[in-house]
Length: 207
Image 1 (cartoon, rainbow, N blue to C red):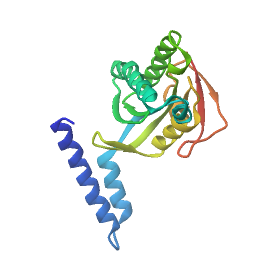
Image 2: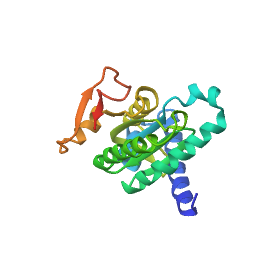
Image 3: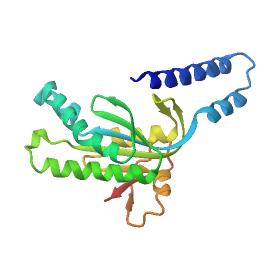
Image 4: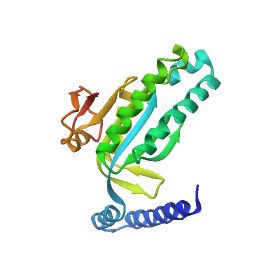
């Protein structure tokens, strides 16, 4: 991690830790401290979680090295899409990625490009080496701690949609994300039955 990023992230974490410590003190004014935390760290972002379909289920069949290869290929193919749409890759954990975008439009365009890049890639290779991507996206006010992590209802909802709900090739979004895209008349959305914690409703993007 670059030294500048280390300093910013450490300073943010130190400030949050002090405020949380104050919040835990007997007789503390929690509402006032919460307001200070949101004032310092509250920002509006689109948040995307990606996951590779069938990863855990097929590790036993093909071996872990095979899936390290799949993860490597997914990063090689997808990180340029993130860069092209001004996304910030906060975390890579196993076969999942956490990415944030300042604009909802950039997040949805990135997601569509990701799926199209993989569709073209998968058409050229054997079945067991295909990269099958699931995507969940939320949008709204969240707590952003430096460039290390994000917290909030939309974060939780996007995580649930991307990592647990979406199937291969799907892009699922929260109602807040859908509403943020109201100017995009060319997009279609289909409501799904599952409502993840932190969201009012969820939709499947028809792209």
